[in-house]
Length: 68
Image (tube, rainbow, N blue to C red; front, side, top):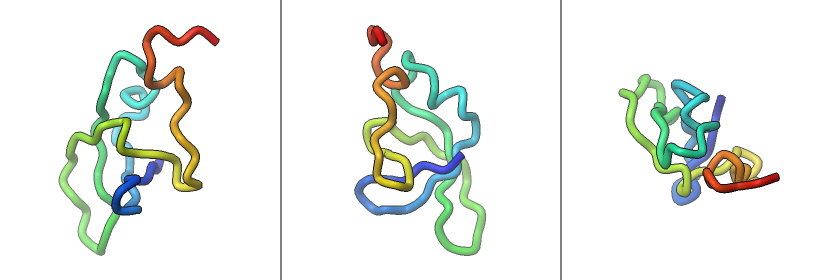
């Protein structure tokens, strides 16, 4: 799964998508997909990312009190 950093536009390869789907987690582990070298895993805040299309993450992935 790829997400995009809002500030830089760089792509992030999500290591474990379940961290992104879990509304009780504010961050997830991913690797920047920038350049030729494989980056070390790092933590990224959900509020700072979106889908590569520019669409925001679903609210149910971010708000533990969301009722759909």
